[in-house]
Image (cartoon, rainbow, N blue to C red; front, side, top):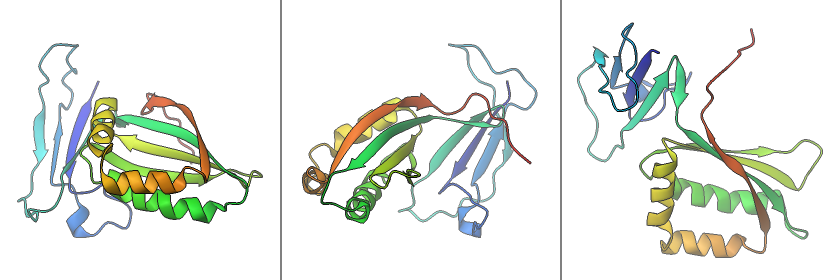
Length: 174
C-alpha cells in the first residue's frame, strides 16, 4: 500500500492560491506500508520553505493508495413545520465555523434532498473519530455553541445516519 501525507494550511482546491499549496508532501513510494504496530517508513518528497503565519492552522491529510484517510459523520436534518431551511442554515454556518477551527476538522457540507423540501443531509469530515469526539467534548460548554444549539432546538430534528471511514474504494467517472 502506498501512503502519502500532505501537510497544508488548508485543503488545496482547483482555485487554490499560492498560500493554499501543500507545505510538505511525504510518501513511502514503493515500499510496503507496515502492518499494525510497525513503524512507517515515509520519505519526504517535497518540502518548500515554510512561510506560514503563526495564526495559521496546519492540517495533515493522509492518503492510502491515493484515497484520503479519515472519517465522515453523516446525519439527516428535518426542518420542523413553521421553519424554513434558510433559518437552520444560518445557525449551521455559525456553528460550523466554530467547530471547523478545531484540530482534525476537515470541513462540512449540507445537501438539500431532492423532492423533500424539509430534508437536508449533513456530512462532516474529520481526521479521525477520536479527533471529532475530542473537539465536541472541548466545545460542549462553549457558550457560543450552547446558544446556537438552543436556538435551533425547536427548528429541526436530527437523525444520525452513521460514522463512516473515508472510502476504501472509489470508481471515478470520465
